[in-house]
Length: 118
Length: 111
Image 1 (tube, rainbow over the protein chains, first blue to last red):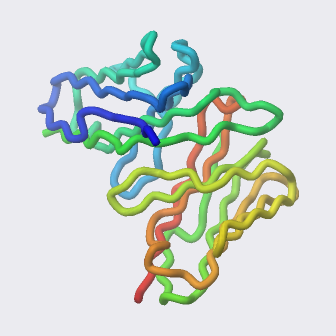
Image 2 (image 1 turned 60 degrees about the vertical axis):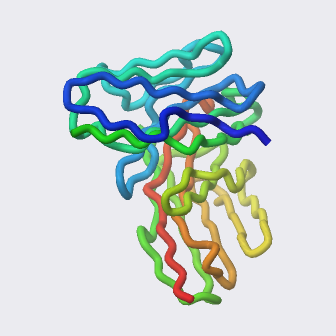
Image 3 (image 1 turned 45 degrees about the vertical axis):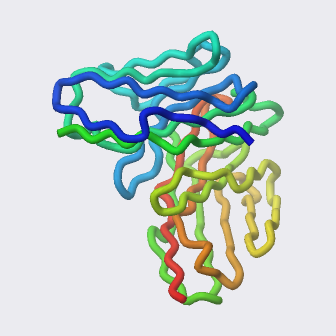
């Protein structure tokens, strides 16, 4: 079965550079979530999109922006990179983004992009 | 804001022993999800609990949702080396538009 695709898998950037991470959700999934996971930490929610519209925002720095395109793929743009931005960035997708009668949709995580800022 | 806590942070068990991780939320949850992340891997959805007091089983894994829908537990019977990983609970906020993950419990299983 098709899974969530993320590219690139590894990225090395220098401070103050920019980076773009891409996410291709599972076909027919209309919701994308972005998470940042530091070493030994839990995934921290950054932002989500439902049907190409931003649906919620978490702890995403102002230096970061994201969007979901007409084909439902999403890109996370990161500017003025800092050392502290080094982390694993996961994208997850789900079929439906809103709770229905208390039930959420399960999220399928991609393999992640490991960003190293030097 | 909503906080999700998990204990213990780490657990080392001998293969064949049981393991339990506990998840507590600062607010009532509409549902709770559990994920497993293997070392070097990505989180993988295990289960979702919705009803108060709900208990679900997946082979050797038993998941429970508290009556007040603020806590949950995951119990593994007779652990195996394949159970190694970090187990996260996650609760939805904002009608499911984002999720708050607990800090996770890292399980090590000694053969």
